[in-house]
Image (cartoon, rainbow, N blue to C red; front, side):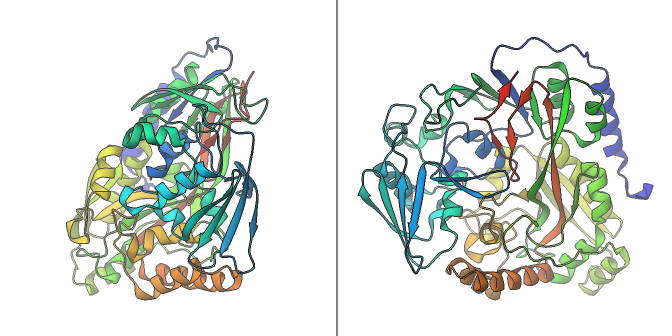
Length: 517
């Protein structure tokens, strides 16, 4: 990488983090038996998985909640609270047979009625739950008997079980829903391996569920999740022994951690795409030439090296390679001269001024600084506006109409936790997905993309789905509602005494097999 591509501020921050890490003491404190602390990069915003749209909060909710299905580390579908599902010939009815040995943390029995209450609650538009669209295909939920529920669909679907496996379709205690109402987000009661004890914004505590249906699990007695946005401070927790697992690990400190005999590096191929959403209904981003120019203006390889220390690959399609129906498009080349040419053709020969938002943490801030420097080289003056996660969420999804939207550019990421192209694309690109309904903060609207998304969603035929998603990805790649950046490798730091804590490709953590030796 040429030195001119390296933001000076980023290198200074990296050097300070390294110096801080090296200067820490090496003695590991004694740990209480079976108790761990996990350091994460953002605040937890809530604990009702049906009403969350950020990965950190959804990951935390997995301590307490489960769905009918889930995924293994390779994103293969596995039954959890379901034992099996029968699907009729035209894929319009799913008859789910439930486990019979499960209770919620409050002693309420898990059964078909509990599933119906949860799914009807999530499907009801009046509840304004953020994960409502996961069950959009369902027309009605029928209780067949105590441990059998039938899902009747509006149209054939070959992907419904993937949506039921998403954390947003987790099952809450019906008693807790009735008791706490909207406050259920602060009083999580599920069937999961851990039981809630307390939560402040930066500190969540849970203890072992003594009545967990998976006998012999979990192995840990207690888990604390601490939110620490500054990378150096998060690393300090690991180095001092105050935390036994941290994510994300500052990539520039990997070599430091590797030299510590007490610690290990965990890397996981991800399905997380990093991109900049461009508000296509606001000038100058309503002009496709401007959007394409910004894609030419960014050196993706340098971006990955500077921001993520090389842990990732340039994005070559709107979805990550690990997603079903991924269709490779190539990589937008780094060509500043072409970028300037397109800006001039669009009427901006001297560039323009605009603003970029991001959830404020060390890596996101560094990414925006890099983008600021690269875009500045083609005349685009970028004002940086890092926002605390709660503020960003309110401002991004608070607008009721595209006209009200303040966002111009937003650096973020997307982890499609169903493993399927529909959830990788529809929430971000369908015209029905504008905030506050879903996450199309580019306010991208294209009739052909909408039509193909509907085709892919409303069929169980794999060939038809592939054709639809191939066409969508080609159109989106050409029309550039985003600056396409990278698909990253997840990097975490771990105390070697801790094993079995699994990081999934969507960044979420699973705790029930974790062991502290």
